Image 1 (cartoon, rainbow, N blue to C red):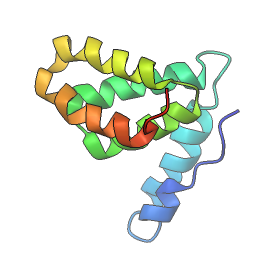
Image 2 (cartoon, rainbow, N blue to C red; image 1 turned 90 degrees about the vertical axis):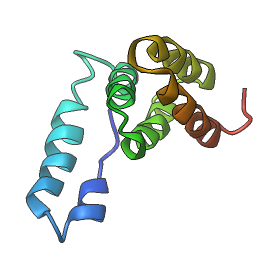
Image 3 (cartoon, one colour; image 1 turned 30 degrees about the vertical axis):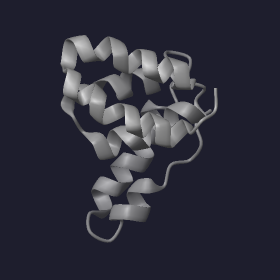
Amino acid sequence: MAKKQTAGRDRLGELAPKFAELNDDVLFGEVWSREEQLSARDRSMITIAALFSAGLYPQLKSHLVLGKEHGITKEEAVEIVTQLAFYCGWPKAWSTFPMIQEVYGTED
C-alpha cells in the first residue's frame, strides 16, 4: 500500500486547498492505491515516462524519487530514459540523467 501523501497540502494547502485535497486524497490516495490493478512500481514507470515526454522536470525529479521508493533501480531508470530519448527527445534525456544521478547517487 502506498504511503499517505501530503505534498499537496504541504506545498499548496493555503493557496489551493481543494487542489491539494484532490492531489493527496484522490490522485495519490485512491488512484495510486489501486495496486491490484497496477503496482506502484508500474505506476511510477508510467508516470516517469509521461513527465519525461512532457518535459516537466520538477515533477519528474519527484517521481524519480518516488520510483526509487517503489523499487525502480538506477539501471532501470537509466534504461527508461534511454528508451524514451528516441521517442520523446534526446535533449530531454540529457536533462534527466543528472536528476537520476542526484536521486540515486553512486549506488549500483
